[in-house]
Image (cartoon, rainbow, N blue to C red; front, top):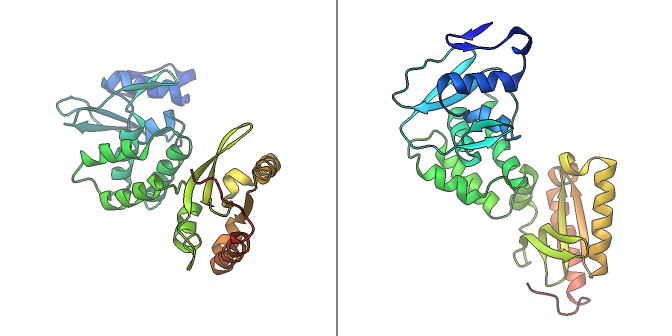
Amino acid sequence: MHLHPGWVTVPELVDDWTVRAYAAASYCGGPLSHWSALAVHGLGDEYTRLHVTVPAGARVRSSPQLRVHRSRLPFGLTTARGLVTTPVSRALVDSWGDAHSATAVRASPGLARAAVLRAVQRRRVQPAEVADELDRRPNLPGKAELHELLGLVAGGSHSELEIFGLRHILTVPGLPECRRQYRVDLRDGPVFLDAAWPDVLLAVELDGAAFHGSPAARERDLRRDAALAVLGWQTLRFSYRRATSDPAGCRAQIAEIYCRRLGDVPQADMR
């Protein structure tokens, strides 16, 4: 069955995304890129139309099932799931530019933003790596917005809820600035707190449904909070609904507990 001139696979495998992706990259002579690279790296969906990047002079054309991107910039190669792709940092920047182009569909910017946050959450990339790739692209659509997002994630906000929390909850009048992604070493290994005031051993966790909604996740959170309590920490947890519907109430609760603990907690570990 022919999917594109020169791009062939057998009929029984035509609906297998991985087989189609391998055939497309082989036909074009370039790596999977953009949204297809994100899918290979487990950071996005397997869309029907495949994306491949080739050098500027390559003589291959796009089709309804294949989008060929030509680039004058050198692009590195990596392998995942047996497929050759652009690195995660390049795929994120490429997809971001595509999502903010004049022809992009309305949902694309949100998908590109979610991919950046997901990649950082899963420690698949460092914000500095994405920033370095971005610096090579002076005319990338949406560049200012990506710079802003990278600044937030580099500062410790690794989800949309944490970004909202930073802007509306964690800056509490009269309190010192919190420490974000603060490391505490527990018996079973280190944990990273969404926000912490180490001087009074107060932690704040912002619980999005994606990571805290299941019974197993709630059990994990309870065990973690108990282990922190052994070390003297008090943990406040705010659900997505509570945080977004009552940020002022969250700030007030943080301030009240901070002030109460200020006189009760001995000199804390100020790592």
